[in-house]
Every structure is written in C-alpha cells, then in structure tokens.
Image 1 (cartoon, helix red, strand yellow):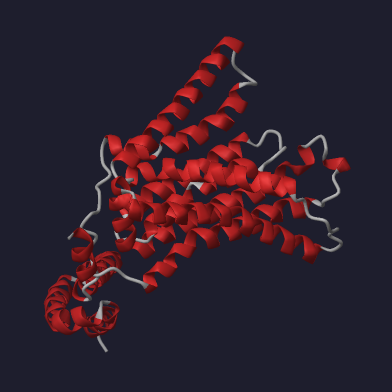
Image 2 (image 1 turned 30 degrees about the horizontal axis):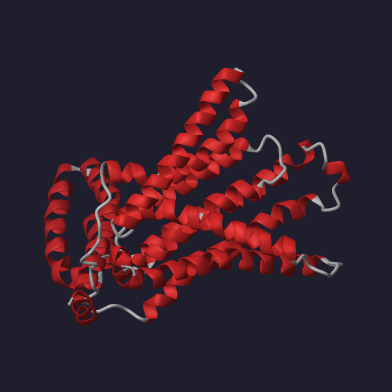
Length: 358
C-alpha cells in the first residue's frame, strides 16, 4: 500500500467519527476531495504530504465537535421540545442584578480579611457598603415580586428564602436538641446526612410554598407559568443555599477567607453558565458542578487549615472528619437542588399554556 492509499484509508476511517446522518450525506464527497488533494500533494513530494496530514489531523477534532453540536440541536428541534415562550432575557443591568446576593456574600469574608489590614475608619466604610448591598438585595426582591419573579431576581429571592429556612431550622433544632449519644463513625455520618436533609429540606419546602402561592397571587403568576416550562428555575432558586452552606461551612475556622472567596467565585461562575445555557438539564448540570466543586473546596480548606487552629488540640473530632462533614453536607445540598427535576415527569404543553393564558 502506497502513502496515498494509506492516508485516504485513514481519512475514510476518521470520517466515521462524524454523526451518522452527516457521514451518510457527505462522506463520499469529502473522501473524493481529500483524494484529489492527497494526489496533488504526493506529486509535490513527501513534505507536502506530511503537512497535509498534519493539517487534517489538527482541524478534524474541531469539525467533528461542531458537527455533533449541530446534530444535537437538530434533534432537539425535531423532537418538538417546547421552548419557554415567557423566557425573560438576562442582559445588561439585569445581568448585574443577578449577582447582587453573590456580592453580598462576597463582602462577608472580605470584611473579615480587610479587618486585619485596613484602618478602623476605612473598615466602617466597608461595613456601610455591605449594608447598602443588603438594602439593594431587598429592593431587588421587592421589584422581582412586582414583576413576577423574573430570572434576574431569583438568586436574591433564593437567598432570603435560605436565610428564613436557616432561622426556622435553627430555632426548631435548638428547641428540640437530639436526646441520643453518637458512639460510632457510621452514626455520625447518618446524623450529619439527616441533619443536612432536614436543613435544606426546610428551604425546599419554603420554595415549594412560594411556587404554590405564585399560582394564586396575580403578580407572581408569570413565575408559576415559567416553572411549568422550566423546572430548573426552582433549582436556581435553591442554588442560593450554596452561599449559606459555604459561609457556614467553615464555622469557627480562622484564616479561611481565601477559600470562601474562591468558593464564591466558583458559585458566581456557575450562575453565569446557567444563564448562558438553554436546556433545563444542562442548566441543572452547571449548578450541580459548581456546588460540588465549592463544597469540595470547603472540605479541602478545612483539612489544610485544621492544624493552624488554636483549638485543634482540644477538639474531639479527627482532622479527616472535619473535611468529610462538608462533603456530606454538599451531597445533601446537591440532592435538594436536583429534586425539582422530578417536575420533568409533568411536562408543560401548548394546550396547558393556552388554558392558563385564557
């Protein structure tokens, strides 16, 4: 077999990497063009052949990836997957408003960090800025409720729901503390997981209550209709709980601000990716990846910072357990954020929307 036939044979096999429909339609034409190009390069010598082979190998992965993306989009369109007619675009100032709760959370470890370096007067200015961010977040929620909770208001509303859930859970937990003693690691793991489910379950119940109220309160009905089309909005609402989990995750740990700031950056990127995607399942995936990375970072941070804590010599829990707790907590949070996916079992359709709009 000469070099020309070898290159053509390899190219023919590589064409099978393209989607089946694309391969059936274009493979013969592409192979014909490639044969003409290879024969022309072969007449010019070995070096042009090598350059041609390198160029094709370099460009082929990108071409295959683009073809698969186009094919997946074509299948989505042909499957009749409904597109949310009430999808609200998030651009410009609305995009900045989305990140108000993230800035609010970002300011808390920033204050702790700045408190060790800045003058007292400058520190008071920073506290004032945090207060202004808190007021802005409340204004965003009020405006969001008036406009039917568009996507730019969901993170702020979600953070307030999580704060309310935290207050309710801690009040209940303090009033009825557990009356048993944990004597093994397995019991500690089970207790931590159940506590996490109850903690984030409280926030899930509050979010579900909001959806039910939205069906009856006229200004919030647009939000209820959007939930019918895109269940990931409820996951986005619960996503703000990750901000609470991150800040509470380090507890009494000192010098943890860099890890908290890095985690908040990851969560902000996750929210931005969510807004860039269109399919609910892909949006949920972006949120889950960001939460998993963040809680993993909390576990790593606690493991590394543990020997630096002044209280660690008196601590009854081992170092590895301090790192495992955020992972268990993160797993329960991931479960709660993913739980709205069960709404896929009750998809919206055009007839339902027409009935709701009538």
